[in-house]
Amino acid sequence: MRTKTLKKNKINVVTLGCSKNVYDSEVLMGQLRANNKEVVHEEEGNIVVINTCGFIANAKEESINTILEYVQKKEDGIVDKVFVTGCLSERYKPDLQKEIPSVDQYFGTTELPGLLKALGADYKHELIGERLTTTPKNYAYLKIAEGCDRPCSFCAIPIMRGKHRSTPIEDLVKEAENLAANGVKELILIAQDLTYYGLDLYKKRNLAELLQALVKVEGIEWIRLHYAFPTGFPMDVLDVMREEPKICNYIDIPLQHISDAILKSMRRGTTHAKTTKLLQDFRSAVPEMAIRTTLIVGYPGETEEDYQTLKNWVQQMRFERLGCFTYSHEENTHAYNLEDDVPEEVKQERANEIMEIQSQISWELNQQKIGKEFKVVIDRKEGNYFVGRTEFDSPDVDNELLIDASKHYLKTGDFTNVKITDAADFDLYGEPV
Image 1: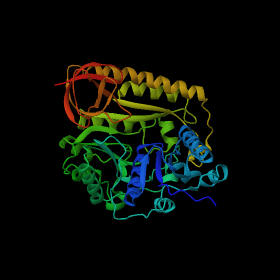
Image 2: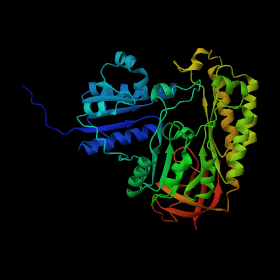
Image 3: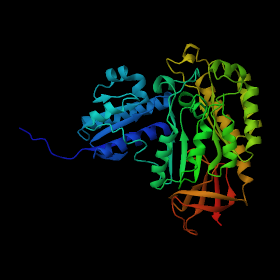
Image 4: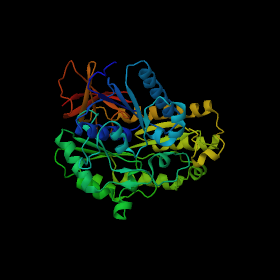
């Protein structure tokens, strides 16, 4: 009889998708570590947990390919067990169980205790805010709410993440203190919708009060806002941004489109005029603010006229940061009942054209920075450069600032003042002052 080897299990957590998933993986890893489990992030391990994304077609495809890759490794004897969690699993569990039965177990987005149990661990309630961060040590994501109550026609997030649930201010402050104690200097606030924060708990939009509590956390130098919904945005947040040096003059506000007909069909609860006025109010309240947005082209019924309206508006608004995506036809969403009538190549052409325009805008805005000084955080060393960011740039999605490592020595995670010497469309070059 073959005796089973007494090798120690090593759990490899693989994260796909957005920053919310990164956060969830970190919480899972913190729980596993507290249970004395050996856990790694995207390294070799004989037990694999894949935290999937199920948002749009490309993300789903990547998730499925990753599951198939590890199932093959299981069949080849390289890994012993494969577990799947996250949005794809929440959304398509019965289909996945049928199509890929070799996965040991599937778990949804709210089944962390069950997943831990399957991994031989107990869910520890006392671990509020304790997690194993996977980002560079100087910044971390802080998820302030889960789920979404918005009715956007194209979006499957409420199906996968449920209704909006805010995390109490005191829990978030405690989590921020833990992160600061571990050397984190920048908090990136994330949620499906920051704008809604507090309505369920405090019966009012309470993002400003949360920010006022977080700026008191010692060791935190920057606080950045990601994913605010435009409708009902609490304008008192801008007062806090203007008055508190720790709050970055930066906001990520996905606007999706600007044609009134498309906004109505998307069920965004706003109009071309209201959205433009909101952005003008942002600019007058915080003139220095960098606004990042994301847009969708090729939505069902998007005419050439709708697209031209969007294109002209992008040229007019001159966003500091912008991403553009092609529409993905998602089942169980309201828009799935509409005909996906914009051909794929037209969607792609429109997205490329918007990004071309944005590239030129970004280049022009970056040229204006030459000769100026900025406070910069150093994220990493890459090749011959130290790579940093200004307060107007979020990791992974925005501009980076490159400093010649053969001439200057800088420490990762440190803040330094840098004078901009040159600029491209999405990169800045500079020298420490």
